[in-house]
Image (tube, rainbow, N blue to C red):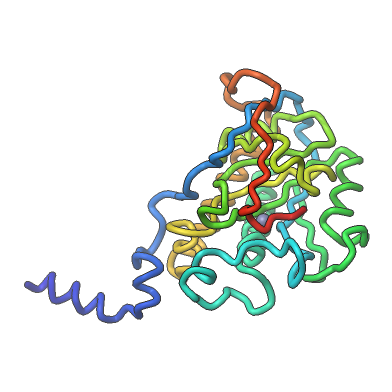
Length: 271
Ligand SMILES: [Zn+2]
């Protein structure tokens, strides 16, 4: 009786929006990034990397707001009419930036040679502008730096799920392999080869921006724990890759034979 009274009191304090979005748990029990990519690659990253390899982390769509390729708004905004997390950017970029900064902070603590990059403007019209993610990635990738761009995928049925879309301008290495083992493995030539990977960016799709993952990010009570849990999974994967300690049983084959996709119902990913 007491319990049920307390329960109904507790429930009545919840606004309808909160009740829809997430259970009021104080922390996340376990990171749930949703399904892995439904299109699977079978490439293997074998190239060893230097323990001091410089890693540069970017937020996907950081310079492409209010224009083509501005990222997903997420299911909460698009499907349920929730307010965007920020009036200045799509929700994907809001979360991409949080995860980028958390990954850099945590990875630095753990001794990785890592920095974050931000273009400093939310809309840069020309991709060739030297400040854009693409321009900086092309330049630093040529120097041998590892460029990682954080993304969240579109919600279903448009999104594919979590996973790594690796860079196309170099041999695939043990960091690519480690991230793919941890998050999932997109075909190497996903959608015919995206603009970022052609410029040396490995795109990491954390998960589709919907369901438990999005709810745990949006709920203020679980937000920080969720961002930290994502950052920890990324950092752990980076460290295993840098140390050359990826799983000894990667999937066989080096040829990516996944069929190219030309699905027009695709996400608003960078091109
Ligand atoms: Zn994206």
